[in-house]
Length: 153
Image (cartoon, rainbow, N blue to C red; front, side, top):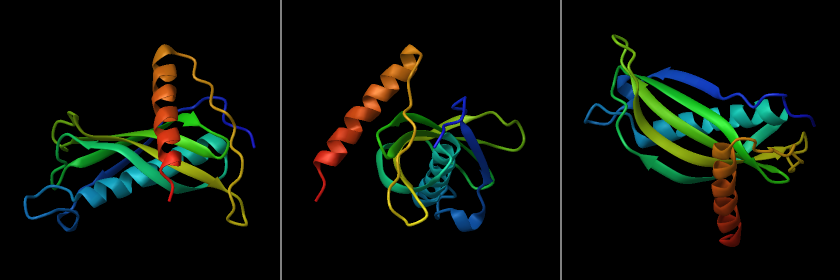
């Protein structure tokens, strides 16, 4: 498998409808997590040119709501790889349709496992961080991944 020449982020937009919200008029946490999972899978697939399934979610932090009628902007980018796993940083911002100013809502780290046609894990291309920020994110994701693997049941 060959990775794309540039690890560009994936951006998913979705309007939040009444059926997506709780009694307070804000998006269900599960709705936001679903959007994050979808974007992470797309980012990993774009990076490694194969199918992915979710292995784990880690470091999910909600900092603000996405309100009914707002647009959720979900951005996902591969920041780490191991032999069969992509670590994907996902951020969620909200904006309303009148001014399109964004507010941060949520951020997290999702680990996606590459699978082949038989449903078994396959190898992914190695991600090599270049910038200082990419190196910091890679080290953080690597530590989280090692800790997660150490807690397997």
